[in-house]
Length: 126
Image (cartoon, rainbow, N blue to C red; front, side, top):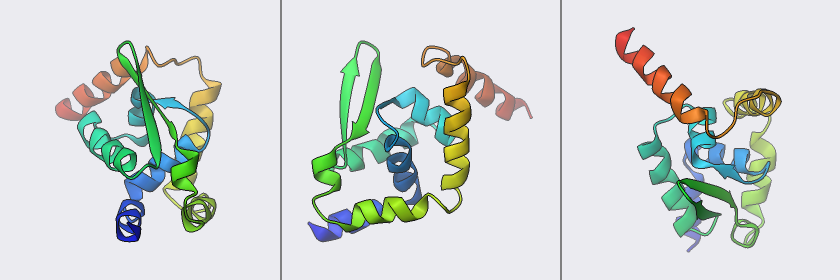
């Protein structure tokens, strides 16, 4: 059990996900946008976090929302301590700024899939 928790927390992307979810529930498309990773990669990490009881996922129509599972996260003291320490390091500081910018913007979850598609098309062209 403890080795599964350590493996789960050893991945920077999963720590970035937990750090963003510490602000509250988010849609998968919001996480994809904020982290700048593809949905398939994000889904893999969310599955690992879910199986190890760090997050909960809830489907509402076509959207999947994720939130921290407080009981799972705090079954040991150290996961919470790790999250409090990483917020001062990169790339977590950049994620925090992007999250604040997103919250202050008029963007909504409905807009993000279009923006993500546009970004991917630019990457292929450029």
